[in-house]
Image (cartoon, rainbow, N blue to C red; front, top):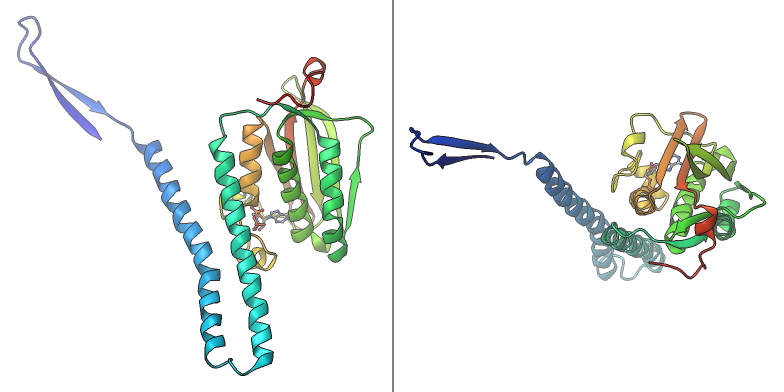
Amino acid sequence: LIEILPVPAYQGLSPSFFLVLFHDRTAERRVERMRTDFVANASHELRTPLASLSGFIETLQGPARDDPKARDRFLGIMREQATRMSRLIDDLLSLSRIEMRRHLQPQARVDLVSVIRQVHSQLTPLADELGLELAFAAPGEAMLVAGDEDEITQVFSNLIENACKYGANGGRVEISIRRASERGEEVIDASVRDFGPGIPAEHVPRLTERFYRVDAGDSRSKRGTGLGLSIVRNILLRHKSRLIVDSVVGQGSTFTARFPAISANVAKIPASTET
Ligand code: ADP
């Protein structure tokens, strides 16, 4: 946008000048574009199972009315589509809730070891079903970070579930936590490693975009919404933390959540302290 403003003659100096202002709207336009893309994607993702539901309802009211076998099969598919829609709505709501609180950094004291232990036991049945060994080498000490326990739980549920779903043919998923340092600051790395197909390098920078999938068909068949890693990224941002992805095609992927460690003094704050 270019704005041209006449400047009145100053102290008898004439002729008058014109002030030309350039406004760079690139960033504004990008945000606007992202918003409209998001609404379009979300509508499309919701419309697909809805269209399938309508189609089956019509079939059940018409040609399949007197065919009990077809009816049972169609009702099963309809149930799956309804579950898919509600999963999508849950993820959309999660994402918007987290984005609304983006600028508030949660401050409760959270032990990553106990959070991961809990997620590990919740997801062990899924791993068993997929024929995977889900290994957690828990360190002998608490690994404290400042945060929101429910959100951190959501991070590891997503990462571990992805490792199980997409890395199932690797036979094993390993979860580990260790202290490290980054630019002189102490950090805690919690990693989820799978030995599945890995992710081609060109996809890695886009994984946390909303609705981005490496293989849409594969993701849908694995009950993915394409929002999981976007939720992970937003939660980690709110925790002044980040996601690091290492992946080698044919060897597997490691997703690491890197948190700033809290100092011994902060660690003494009672667990109920939250802002
Ligand atoms: P989804 O709900 O589709 O799983 P995510 O945001 O969690 O969405 O992940 C985005 C995409 O990244 C997935 O669709 C999948 O293609 C890819 N992906 C995520 N985790 C892994 C993994 N451990 N191994 C291979 N691909 C993965």
